[in-house]
Amino acid sequence: MHKKGDYITEEKRKALELELKDLKGPKRKEILEALEYAKSLGDLSENAEYHQTREDQGKLEERIKRIEQILQSSQVVSPAGGDVVEVGSKIVVQKIGKKNEKQEEKTYQIVGSEEADMAQGKISNRSPLGEAIFGKKKGDSITFQTPNGKVNYKIIKVS
Image (cartoon, rainbow, N blue to C red):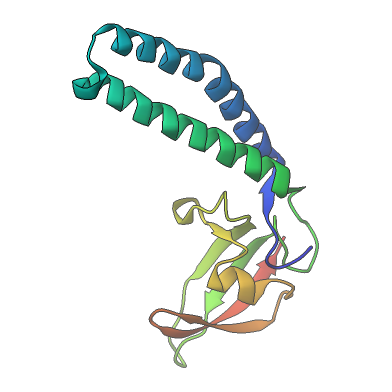
């Protein structure tokens, strides 16, 4: 597994396939019907409904292409369970700060960039932390650059 590869979980692959099916089926049909209705309203040059529907159609087709590209170029990974940090690994890290300053532990899951969501503790393998921690083991210390300067973490657990 490469540090900078494109990865998705099986769960994300299924979600993207469902979204693609919906976009290519009901959503596409809905927009085509709205387009026909807007055309029936007359003069297309001043028809705001027609222009909005065309814009919506463009966004829909763009999303369809994006999902197809993700599904074609991404490697599906299973949640890791080894000692080495890779895509799918759940990690517990602790910031290394000043002596006698107790730092709280944080739990993250390393995921592909399409699934990254800090609110859920899912960080991209391409993020500064994801790149720094990739391939490391429990007990290792890492240092990486953030917009606010260098940060040091110790890996407490890998699962």
